[in-house]
Length: 506
Image 1 (cartoon, rainbow, N blue to C red):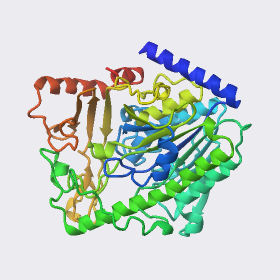
Image 2 (cartoon, rainbow, N blue to C red; image 1 turned 30 degrees about the vertical axis):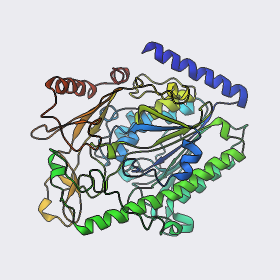
Image 3 (spheres, one colour; image 1 turned 180 degrees about the horizontal axis):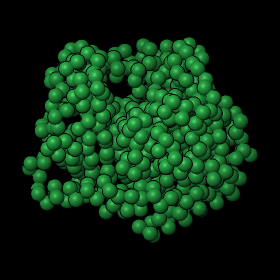
Image 4 (cartoon, rainbow, N blue to C red; image 1 turned 45 degrees about the vertical axis):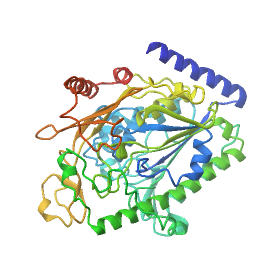
């Protein structure tokens, strides 16, 4: 481990020396983050331009996962490089830690933007930050997270119209005019304004573009409102099926799903893809502008999402928050200096790896309390030379939440449920709280999950034999296997910093 870390630091220093010698400064970084973009049900299909301009010019990662399938906990992991149990943000509300004063004082002050600032980077942010950002209980719009020079933060959760932005601490109201207010396009314009001020003689910059696409309310730009009209949500795999021996929240879903539920799934599926076409336009313009200004060769471009999504898988109408791959597997594409194009890599990488990667690429030292692994050792490897030992296991955590009253479902009042459809199929609950350890070796791939409910319900999947996670093998698996995973989960759920990094490699 020490030798690997030393080699990684050495590579980073050599890379920085080369870049400074050739370009006169450290590398720039652009990070495009979408919202709820899956891989398993076709979420990358619309990203034709992004794949061509980012993925095909660098690396497409096949095995990118998030450590929590929910927006605010996952985003908090992205900014800190920590598992949920270490940054403390459990769900999307202030009471659950999202943009809370505890987050602001204990985590935000050492998040990756602060390290970039220490290295002299100019930093720019536009779009969704954390779900409850800018609300009164989170310090209001005047709170600008440390480390950002240009701040254009969305107040609250993803929307496309009728929202408030914090522009460097001052509220800016937006309505429902496409020309002036459509949020993805506004982020696009703000990015262009920032890039126009950059040149080869400018200080290095970090630019984060955090779009609402493809999150609810799934509102496409008008010019894309009819695209994909002949498409429906995928009907293969676990669609409209319960699978075998799932936790009760899956079992309560209606199978087969009602016709109106399936019709809504298809409509949501099309509109999710449509919203991503505006992201495509933004990525194309960003890469083109970098190229025209002579900055592209010295700029890393990262593209990813905060969590996945499901639409009808295991008969759950539409959400995230579940332990299955469709909710935790997300896209990751990277291009940049020294990265050979055309690579498809199989290393297991996580959202907690982004912070240490950004920190290391910009010349700062990764803090000891970071749980993620820097991707720099992967970026330096020759094309198509994936390292199966980069990470062998990882942790997924989710803390379920509830609403006191459920619209259209009065019988669920104070029953610990939330995110319920018109047919009263619920996607989350207080006891939909779980932790999983996922192990991926050369020839084996297992997932072991324990629910925090009255029976500590366990789900185990052999993803080599059962990649769709249809059959829970907890009753048929070897006792030694279950014992091993139980011990791994107990240890990883308590790990911190360097101990977490070590456990992920053993």
